[in-house]
Figure 1 (cartoon, rainbow, N blue to C red):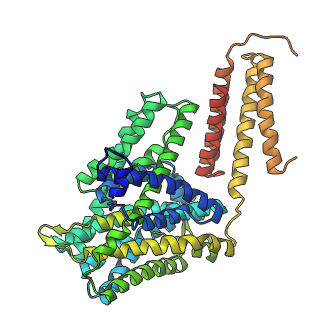
Figure 2: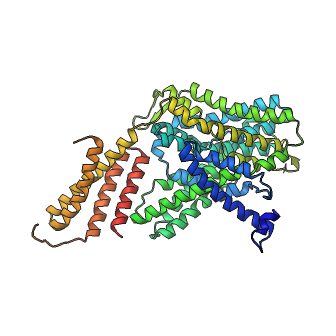
Figure 3: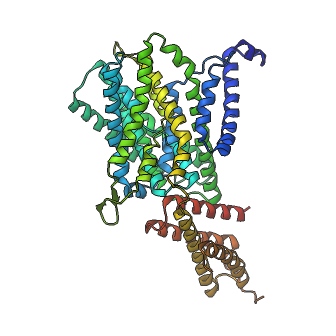
Length: 537
């Protein structure tokens, strides 16, 4: 540490350590993205490995991942943004597989890990084994979804994976809280179930209230800077009070994001919406990247914490925990029917999901920073009772993260290619359809305005050429094959705003009718906003 401090005169050793750690994280993030594009391996793998190697560098002191920092600084904005960009309609359309994965699979994983570890690792008691199961139950969707998106996996598979990861964090952390509380006051199955319903259900209800209040509070704000600041405050306004009330802050924040994500974005002009979207994309990327590096940084301290345990117990706990989470997830997705809820018919449909897609879902159970943060948040003592097996629990969690993230993360692209999962054209076809309908809506409105002599022929022709060009391009992608001046009753910018509104309405109609997905609608809407923002420069 002294060598690093000497490079920056006037800084104390602790400040120097964090300064160089921050610079190192920035370099690692950029290098990991580059290596990921070159190797096709998810970038979080490189981030965790680099952090683990860096933790043993001479002269670099320990960089502690404080769990409260994760839960209060990282988790709320990450969960909120995930809810913000998720479509409730598509969640309902896949409610059964998502519910089975988020609730059933979390419970199955928790109980399986608890039973196996408790039975075969003498150092673990039942409470410690149960908490370990809850800690390693939730998945981290970042790495898996990045692979799915890059290889063009079917949209429904990606939706199920994202939806499962959205909800299972809250479910698992609710179980985790019950397990920790059981150290001081053991509870039966009935009281544990009641506590779970109160924590999870109360969190969802609180999130609905915060989402309703926030949607009305932000309406008077018109400038993008104020909207961005408010959007940063909302997730904390949902998480902190819910957590203080003993409810699930994760589910409260997620619910708030889902509510606000479906609200009309007309409060901002197109350039403001683009700024808001770009801001959150960069923020989420930075938060996720820093978390994965910090996960790796914990290895040195974790190794020091298990020196008092028998080597057999350490090895057994790490191996059994890793194997059980992988096997249970694979068995679950291969054996449990992936039923689908059909909102249009209000019936259950046993939609046939190929075994290849089930296997891909089963192999996508990567664990990440949330699991480690939960493990690190296990208190040393609860109401005067020492928490059993804390150090071994944290080390086992780290091993499960590394095995799933590195092992499954690096092999997932290969598996998807071997299973011929990828190259799906559905989303591309939906996007072409959306762009074509938007251009047709714009041309119809221009014809109407010109016929009613609300705009001049020259202005109508100028705009018509722009949208005819877009329509021709959409037709090609789909595989289809000077006048007298009149009074200009509306300015060019006003007409473009009206045309843009017509296109947005056509886009919403396509989404409401189910012809395009929420992801496609957001992508095309962003393109429309970008075009409008460029025209206003």
